[in-house]
Image (cartoon, rainbow, N blue to C red; front, side, top):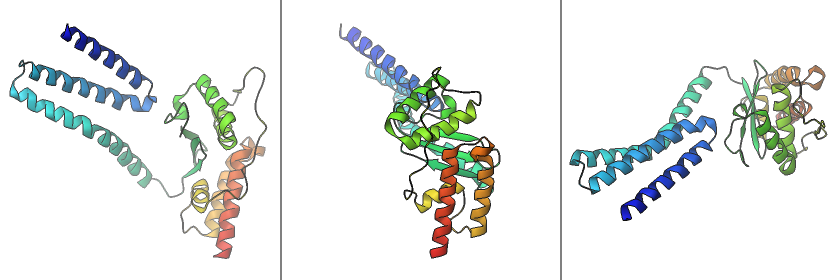
Length: 244
């Protein structure tokens, strides 16, 4: 009877763990499944060793598996960082801009004008926007609309680019366009928005602004919220240049 209860508990735990992994953002599921498999192997080795059905070598391997399971999250985090560093080191400085709100982080490629985003908090935390279908994005939009106007407008920028033929509900429901609040931008945010270095000259700031605004200006089919952020960043940096 105790063995049956133990087996049932293990099965329930496995079902819950699998569901947890399935709920992860798609780009994190592979590492989640690897950790789950290592955990199952370690548990099986422990049980077999405790029952006297595994050689001492198996017990040693159990220790290795447990250690590997503990180190795996660090390695999984490290390799993407190394890959990202390698990609960034091969790109010219200022090729990407970043706009961050309470709920979203959006990056803009200067060469292609393509937007990519990541959810920072809420029901889709850690999801990449590119992993989400239209229904999920609409749910995220409703959440942003209720929680943070800046995140709502930033998401509209992405939706308009990804779904140029329209993404709204049948009633056409969409909030009025908003512009960023003045006075809320820091120097680090302004640098990230224009994708320039700390020591960028006035000419470099103006050139970055001109390049971005040509891609995102509303008159050219761009987005007024992002255009306003780019204008705000340029004005902030040039003002601080003039007072430094």
